[in-house]
Length: 82
Image (cartoon, rainbow, N blue to C red; front, side, top):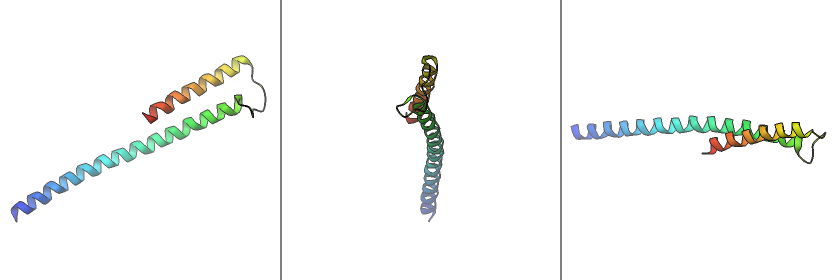
C-alpha cells in the first residue's frame, strides 16, 4: 500500500507539472494570437492606403512611410510566428 501511495504521489506531481506547462503554452498562444491579429490589421490598413483599391493617391514620401510601417508590422508578425 505504501508503494502504491508513493506511485500515486509521483504521478500527481508529473500531472501537475504537465498542467503547468500546458497553461503556460496556452497563455503564450493567446498572446501570440493577439499580436498576430494586431499586425495583420496594420498590414491591411497599409494595403488599403497603397493598394489598387485605394481612395486617393499618396505622395512618394507618404508611400515610403506607409511601406516602412507595413515592413515593421511584417517583422513583428514574423517574430510571433517563430
